[in-house]
Amino acid sequence: MKYLKTFEHISEDIKDDFINKVSNDDSDSILKYIKKYKNEIVNFNYNGKFTPLMYAALYNSWKVATVLIQHGADMNQKDSMDETPLMIACNQAERHNHMDVIDVLIKGGADWNITKDKRNSTTNKKYFLDFLNDHLRNQIIKKYPEKYNDYLIKKDSSTYNL
Image (cartoon, rainbow, N blue to C red; front, side, top):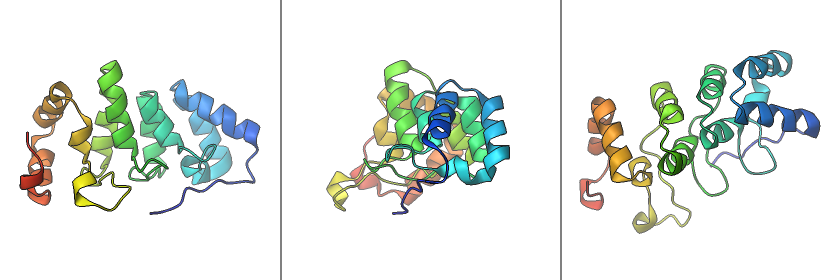
């Protein structure tokens, strides 16, 4: 697992403001920060928890997610709970019924086959679609049938029931 970078040379006030802009889907301000701090600010670890893209997934900030991905955000980075931005977006989509960030991440190339597995055990593995309720899972399958077929080929069908 790659470790999240903290970028200590960027002040806490700037990091706080940046994450506030992420959570408010303020893509214009995010672009200004990226221009000033180059792309290094795109993947920093905020308070030892999430990257900016993970916060965008948490708050359904799809415009900011798009900008972050265009500037090199790691779509498959895992947080301390072993979840990727796509998994975080799925958890939020179930609570708030929004798909915007999920669409941005899938179109951007987020990996469907990364698992959440803190104990390195096949019985504990959770795949992207495992994070969705039936309604949202069916929406994704209808919207992205070719990606879903590829996903099924890569995943052992005996461990997953649709």
